Figure (cartoon, rainbow, N blue to C red):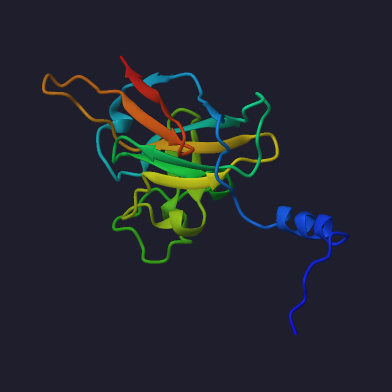
Length: 192
């Protein structure tokens, strides 16, 4: 027996369809709101990749609908333009008080305090939860996540190392964001 929705039940079916879990694609006419470029001091903290020392930068990427209002639950893809700049979800970052400094080689247990990274910008040790705990061999340069109820996607960028041009000068690190309809970027700019 096949059941057909009567016109009286259609509003309820539409309500249920609107409650589907998960992020959605941005509607036509939506736009990205990118942060200002971020400048940071170029020092020895960024000289060697994978040394557990670098800078942790926190920012937001926003999505506005065609009417100019913030949109929640919109899928945003973010890509780092440099292999030494890792994209970390806000919920995966935790500041820690203790850290073991003589950890050579790194232990196999990723819950060991040796896995704390030092943020030279904030002068604090941080740990990365979940898949990020093994950053010694994993540098996530891609992230895909939905905007929150304010139309914002909070994101951390951990700069472990910077690129140098042929003259030895530090190169800007582009961070790209896309909602499919639009792609924009901002720069992490090392300065002397």
